[in-house]
Length: 101
Image (cartoon, rainbow, N blue to C red):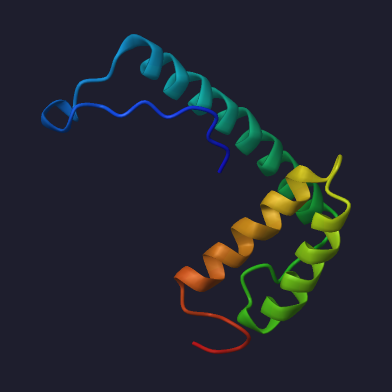
């Protein structure tokens, strides 16, 4: 994660957010929402083409390899890399890694 500047909040006032920090959080939220919309559109496009098996643990290693391949040339493929990362994250959460359950 990129962190340009970090301002420590007082320990006793951890729930108070200053306006600058709140604006940063709002902009980050908007960026994530916009990016997630692009991810969903790309996933829909791929599903319409007939791509299946994203949630099959047997495909784990192949998805890792696809992600590494896409990450190497990520310019313009950021959404694809993010979708592959989401798929791997989902498989790991469900305990499915490389055919293991």
